[in-house]
Length: 132
Image (cartoon, rainbow, N blue to C red; front, side, top):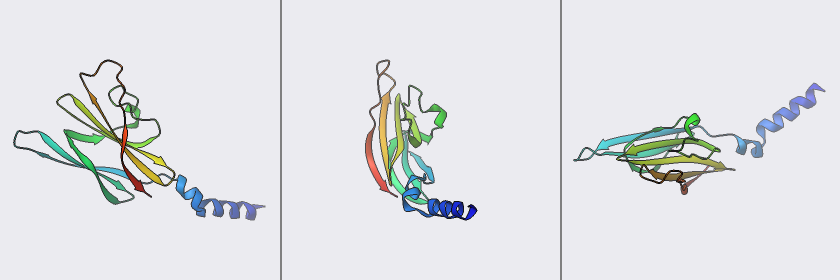
């Protein structure tokens, strides 16, 4: 009986279908330079299993967002996001999050102005797809 269990475990660990379910290693990288007026201009990269991909540019200082903050009103990060980052400058919140759909990562972008009416929803749109 133990040998059947070992064969099953070996199959599960080496099956390509199972491999698709595993989450990739994701890391954000931010490079911020100030322009002549002192406004922070940030270049945003996402490292997927060590491979660097340019995601976009934003105004403000960006940082990775803690999962516990995803549901806060100013972020509204989808619950199935693997990771998210946010930047803020002059009243505008700029957010990115990553959703995995089988073997494709969808990078989504959303904005929320601090002057938006109470209860305003952030509309996230897919800005990039990364194949795993």
